[in-house]
Amino acid sequence: QQQQEFPPEVQAMLDELEETQEKLEELQNRALAGSESLQAEQVRIQGVVEAALRIVEPEYESLIARFGELQQEAAAAQQAEDMEAFQQAMNEAQGLQMRLQTAQAEAFERDEVDTAVTEYREQLVEEMARLDPEAPALMERMEELVERLEEILG
Image 1 (cartoon, rainbow, N blue to C red):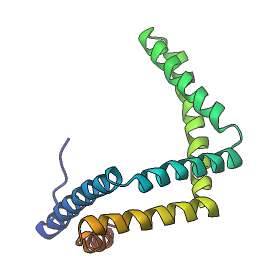
Image 2 (spheres, one colour):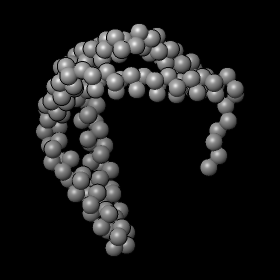
Image 3 (cartoon, rainbow, N blue to C red):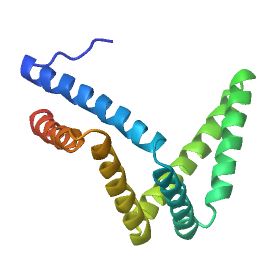
Image 4 (cartoon, one colour):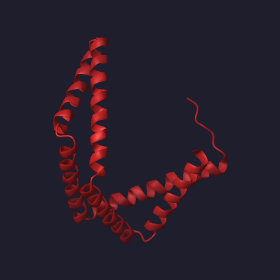
C-alpha cells in the first residue's frame, strides 16, 4: 500500500496537526488524572448518556448483548470454516451496529446530553489551561489547521 504524497506545505500542516493533537491529548490525560471533580463529571455524563440511550433505543442493552453474542458466533463459524454461518452472523451484527450507531447519534442530540457534554468540556479546557496556559492557543491552532486542511483536501 502506497502512502499518498502531499505538497510540502500540506504535509507540514498535517505534521503540525498531529503534533498539536498529541500535546493536547497528553494535557487532557494529565487534567483528568489530576482532577477528581472531572473524573466524577465523566462518570455522571456516562450515566446521562446511558439514560438517553435507553430513551431513544429501549432495547439498547439487549442489542449490545446480542452484538457480543454475534461476534462469538462469527468467530466460532470462522474457526469451523462455516462461511454461511459466519456471513449470517456478520450480516446481523452489521444491522445491529447501524442501529446502535443511530441510537448513539440520537442520544447525543438530546438537550440533557448536549448540555452535560458542553459543561464537561468547558471544565476540562479550564483545567488544561490551568496546567498549561498555552492550551487554549493550541486548541485554536488545531481548529485552524483542521479548517485549512479541509479546504485544501476537500
